[in-house]
Structure formats: structure tokens, C-alpha cells
Image (cartoon, rainbow, N blue to C red; front, side, top):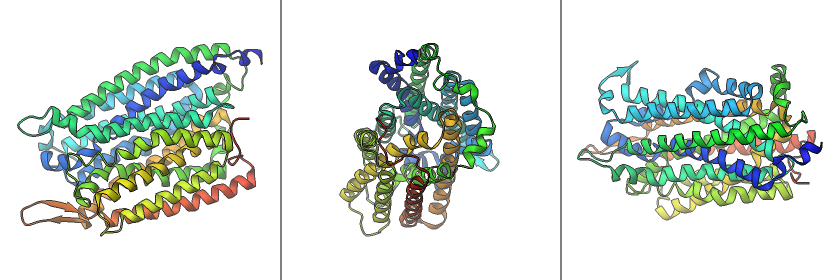
Length: 456
């Protein structure tokens, strides 16, 4: 035990430096994930996309993760091969996928060809997004395991909260600055829609380099720690452990909460800028500014709520409160006559609070329900289930908007009524509340310690 006590994981500067390095990689990933979100209106007017095309593209993020089980394989590889190999591989996949997506958007001529009935530009951009999605999701589970490795028994919820907050900076920058960057490099044909994607690809390259730097810290940590509960657990993982995870009721409840909650937030952000244009009459060039308030709010609040969980506990209660706030926001958004942009700002701030509450308690709680040697696979399975929602919900919304909510005026202008869509989000929010309550009951029954503090 002497080596553990003198390990660099007990050095405050070392573990927080490790956190900042890997968080930067995820921040770049989240920027690229949402870089297209503010450009839905521009894609329709400038490149001839419609809501079905945009929904199809947005669903691409989860294709390989869901249909080819790449995320689950990523979790198994993480538990068998370790953090360094898995992290570098996923960072490379993000760069490759981003490059393909950039190529598609930068080549308008691709819209003149069709692949299985889909515009070539839409299909190739979606394939690039799918490859990127594998890298980004596997990076996410790898970073989660890194945080547990460095912070278990310490400020784990705070560390996860800070990582989430830094990732939200990437989302906020994408929502707020994508259209201004496109306008900065505009040509006679209009804003340069590929310019923000190029910026995102460059940021991902920087993130890949950052992760490469982290691998040296991880190697040093493994060399210093000989205790099997910290270092050798990755080698002790067995495929039979997957059955143990899948038969754990607490695992399924937290996985269901994850998919329901995130399906109310991330797909919403994909359409939030368009919602601002169609319901609140916000200028398309400024429409991404209001949704960007959501991630900016989480930057401060997620670490705060994580700190509360570390010092006071009440993790299950925190998740229930966040789910209630989520329902409140979507119900108000669904009321047609409430269309003042100031209300939209207030709702985004409240949604930001909800978006801070649930993740700050949910991700650290996984480490209380699942043994550490199984964490990589457990996170992968949760992310896999989440990806089903992140793939299916945007696709469904695109179809609903195109077939039931679309109006074309006499002069050819297209508008969308988002009432039905927001009601769909409200139903998902109700289900998330039910699951959060069930998780709290299961915690009382099994004694996971979700209501107990993390720091002794």
C-alpha cells in the first residue's frame, strides 16, 4: 500500500492536470458534434437540404455505435487493452471522421449524385459523422474511466462535473460562433458552411496531441502503482462480467435515465436554433446564441452540483430534481402562444440547470453501482443505449417536422411548427422522472450509496 500512498494520483496538481488534458480532447469533440446545429436553416437555403436530410444526417452519429455495436466493442477493448491504446485509437477516429464530414460539406457538387436515394453530400457527411461518433463516444467512456482511476475516493463527482463543464464549452462555442465563422469566410454564394467544420477538425487534431501527452502520465501512474485494485484490474476483466452488468437492475435504471434524459437535450440542441427562428422570430444569424446559453450555464453549475454530491451526497435526489426541471422547460416550450424571445432565454437557463444537475450525479453514481474492473464495459453499454436515443430521436423529429409541421407560404418561404416536437420531448421527460424515482428506490433496497457523500 506504500506505493499507492506515494503515487502521483495523490498529487493534487498531477491529477487535476491529467483531468484538464483529457477534458480538452473532449471539449474539441463536443465542439465538432454540434458545429452543424446552428446551420440547419442555412443548409436548407444554401445547399438544398430539408428537415428529413438534416434528421438523417444528425442520426448518423449513432449508426456504427448502434448497428455495428462499435461502442460496446470499444468498452470491451478499454477493459482489456487499457486506457492508453483505446484513447489514442478513439482520438484518431474522431479526426478521420471529421475530415470526411468536412470534405462532404466543402464539396457542394456531391448533392448532384444520389447514394441509395440520399443526396451524396448528405450521405458522405453522415458517414463521416458516424465514424466521428465512434471515436467521440469511445473517448467519452475512456475519459470517464480515467477520472475514476485518478479520483476514486477523492473529488470524483467534482472532477466529472468539471470534465462535463469543459465539454459544454465546446458545445457552447459551436452554437454561438458557427454562423459568425461561416459569415467571416463568406463568398458571393453566401456563408462558407465548411469553414466552421475545418476549425473543428483542427481543434480535434490538437485534442489528439493532448491525449498523446496524457498517455505518458498514465504510463507513469501504472508503473508506480502495483496494487491490483488500481493497476491490474484491466487484465482481470472477463467476458463473463458482461452478464453480471446486464443482470444488475441498478445498471438498467441508470442506463434508461441516461437515454431518456439525453434524448431530451442533445436532439433538442440539434433543432434549437431552428426553433428560435420559427417560433421566437430570432434572426437566423443570431439563432444559435440563445441555445448557447444552456452549455454556458452548465460550465459553472455542473462542478458545483458535483461538489455538493461529493460532500453532502443526495445523488439520486439531484437526478430527480433535474428531471423535473427538464419537464417544466419542454412543457412551456410546447405552448404555442408563449413566443417571446425573453422567455426562450429564461427557459434555456433553466434547462442549463437541469442539464447540470443530472449528469453531475449520474456519471459518478455508475462507479457506485458497478465494480471498477467492469466500468469501461458498463459505461460503453450505457453510452450504447444512449446512442440509440441520440440516433433515433433526431431522425424521428426530422420526419415529423417535414411531414406534419411544415408550412410553405405563397412566396415559397418554409416554416415549421415545433409544438408537436416539444410535446414529444415532454413525454420523454416524464419517463425520465419515473425512472429517476425507481433508481432512488433501488438504491434504498440495494444500498449502493447514491444518497451518501463521495469524500470520506
